[in-house]
Amino acid sequence: MKLKLKQDIARRPREVVNKLANAVRREIGRHSPSARLRKGPPEALLGLRRLVANPRQFGGFVSGPALAAAITREVDPAAGPVLELGPGTGVFTRALLARGVAEHDLILVEADPLLAARLRTTFPGALVLTCKAASVTPQMLGNRRPAAVISGLPLLNFPGHEVEKIVATAFGLCTSDAVLYQFTYGPRCPVRSDIMARHGLTAQRTARVWRNVPPATVYRINRRAPD
Ligand SMILES: C[S@@+](CC[C@H](N)C(=O)[O-])C[C@H]1O[C@@H](n2cnc3c(N)ncnc32)[C@H](O)[C@@H]1O
Image (tube, protein in one colour):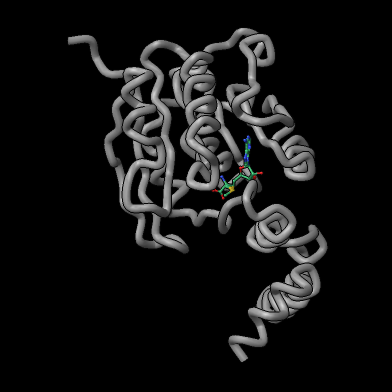
């Protein structure tokens, strides 16, 4: 059965996802018969569809609430704009709002046009940029300088030079004391140590989140204090 499912996914990924989608809808329908079904696919399902459509870019499963709380918990809502890279379906965005960050202080950079359009509808007060994180310019932010960056980007899927460009761009856009929060499913910080050294950055692990599928680790990355 397992093998058959694997073969099916390889040959007909969309069909398998649609079947899964219908099964999830039926299950939700049994417990809450009305509104949620009319609003379109639930978040996890939409994430699954985008993952099948573009595995390298989407990178993984939609994060759970425990990871969303852990990656946003040090953000100071009074510190000004927050830059979010790869918001996807908006799980971390909602956690930022719950922390008290004003919607007009959110700058969301999402490469997938379908997800970006959805974010624009869901968070009408936020600035949503449909582009790659490495190509954002200060002008696109209206010259606002964020003090925090929340990244949901699947950095482990990217080559080193792309990771370096993303990190350099993000810190170039922000205040000098800005902090970037990045999660990973891997065993160490997903920004390589040579990249960190070249940009004068340092990383600390701030959380291990076991109640996420898969379990994840959050890193705080910021500029090293001068000696
Ligand atoms: C794993 S999903 C994470 C979504 C959400 N933050 C979460 O944790 O559930 C990664 C998201 O990053 C977006 N993405 C991937 N590469 C990107 C890039 N270079 N610039 C901006 N967004 C990117 C994908 O389209 C996807 O929505």
